[in-house]
Structures are given as C-alpha cells and as structure tokens.
Image (cartoon, rainbow, N blue to C red; front, top):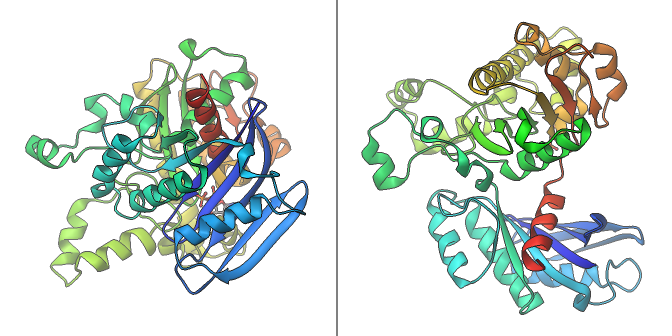
Length: 398
Ligand code: ADP
C-alpha cells in the first residue's frame, strides 16, 4: 500500500489529490488558487472534512508549503505527516517527441521538459516549478512525470505530418502532437472493462468533451489519430477555442490589422461556442438559450455536434473496425442532449444510440447504444488524476 500525491501545477493554480494505491482510493483533494496575485486561497476536501485558508501566496514555494500544511492539518488533514506520502506524480503538458510514456523524473528529464517549453510556453514552465517544489517537499522520494502528449506518440507520420514543407518539421518540430492523452488512455482502458473486451481485439473512438475537447482513434490500445495538433487549438469547436479554421482566414485578418496577440486572443479566448453563440462558453447556458429559442445558440450546438460527428466518421474510416465510441469530459459525461445530437446521423456507419438508455444513464457511466448497434456507445467518467497515480505507483514501485 502506498499513498501517492498527484500534482497538476499551473501558472497561478495548483491542484492536488492523494490516492491510496493499488486500491485506487482517493483520500482527498485540494486546490491552491491565485498564486502570485496578492491574496490567494487554498481549499481542501477529504473524508475528515474541509480545510480552507485565504492568505498571500506570492509564489509556488509558498503554495507548496500550504499544501503540506493542509495535508497534515490536525483536524481535516489527509495524512498524519508527509512521511506517509510515498511518491508524487505530476501532470506535464508537453513531452514533445521525447516521451511516449510516463517517466521517473531526474535532472535529465527536467532538462528535456524545459526544452519542450518552446512548444508549451504557458504550461511546461509551471509544471517544472511544481516538480522542483515537490522535490523540495518530499526529498528523495520518487517523482513521476505523466505527459498529455505521450499517448499520441504512436501516431503514424500520415496522421502527424502537416502538408507544409518538411524542413519546418526538421527545423522546428512542427507536427501534430495531440493532447488530453492521459484522459483518452484512461477511458480507453475503462471501456474495455465495461464491455468485457481485450485491448488487442478492440478499436475505438474516444471523445473527451470538456472546455477543451478532442477526439482520438485508438487501435489495439494505441492512439493512431487525434484531433488536437501542434497546439490544443486544432480540431473540435471548444468552449472558447475555434478548432479547425482555414489558415487563410488568419492571413485575411492580418491584412486588416490583426496582430499576433489579437489573433491569439480571438482564436483561443473569443471563439468556439462562446464566439458562435454570443451567450457563454458553458454548455449549460447555451443549451438553455437554445431551448428558449436563441437561433445563434441553436446553430452553435449544431456546429458543435457536426464537427464531432465529422471526426468520428473520419476515424471510423481509418480504423479496421469501430467497436466502441466513448463519451467523457464535463459535456460528454453530463449532457444527454449533446450526446444524442452527436449520434444523430451516425446510424449509416453502424452507430445506433438508444435514446432511453442515454436518458437513463444520464450523468453516470454506462452503455447507451442499442443492442443491435454494431458499435457500442459508452459514457465513461474520466479521471486523469487517478491515471497519474496508477502510472506513478507502477513506475516508482515496480
Ligand atoms: P475542463 O476541460 O476545464 O476540465 P470539464 O471537463 O469540467 O472542463 O467540462 C466543462 C464543460 O462541461 C462546461 O462546458 C460545462 O458546461 C459542461 N457541463 C458540465 N455539466 C453539464 C451539464 N449538466 N450539462 C451540460 N453541460 C455540462
């Protein structure tokens, strides 16, 4: 038995959770917010109760000190002392072409992750900071890096090369990397349990639909294509991200005064469901507005479902067979109507939703396809933190 601390460190926030392994049991979790923004806050929940504190959190070192304080709090703490934590697992966004699997962290790994910062300038630097602070807290205990990109390193060149001069790949490593790999890997394994199937005999399409969203084709346990690319901007229409657009649109706008910063904001923060609906980036608000007759909201929902359907079709065409389509993420797990809308029209390729089952499964995990559907449709509750704990436990204690 070992207690694993899972850490997801961003530039101004730090999420953490403690798992007891191999039982896969969460003992509690917490969040530090507004690091470096004057007064910050830490909140933690466990079976023993809630812990919260508002205090200046100037940097990640202070944030990690607060995590230690919350974890070991006499009343609402998760462990009696930090000695109980056996290892830590870290979410790291970009592993470039260097890591196809999770890895035990040493100085060499940190150097490589730092090198990959060029590809994920907003994410990798705080990930590295989180690792350094965890080493400071846990000393020589093993620490493991789990990369969002690693699962997709199995993409073949046909799926990862863009149709641009090869020298740009050779020089800058411009290619499709894909993200959400930890979630897609977790749900791909979970759905095998649900369906009683083996990895070597199963091909599936996994749809992670949250604020960010991506679809992945999984053949015999390996990712063979995914909708996000060089950055998490490509692919589906997301909460505030555009997904696929003709790159010439950007050239058109540049001629009309849009500079890099403006285009970045436009495509990452002002587009997607927010930009299309004019209502919100939150699916619940858009569904409500559409039900009340808002045309832009209704069209945004149509675009959303259509784009996902297009990707499912494209991946089905490139898999030998599609045994299952899996829905996960905040929208995939919760929005019964979005799942129904996506599946409308997929019958032609053997994907038949059972509407009553879809309603009955609601926000739980379960099978929502008709008995006669050649392709099963499943809802799986994703858990990236648990996958990080699983990897950390197996790498640190094998
Ligand atoms: P993140 O990508 O930030 O982890 P989540 O996976 O939590 O996000 O997904 C957030 C999305 O899930 C939001 O768009 C939210 O509207 C949507 N969502 C959550 N609950 C529901 C619900 N009951 N019905 C529809 N959408 C929901």
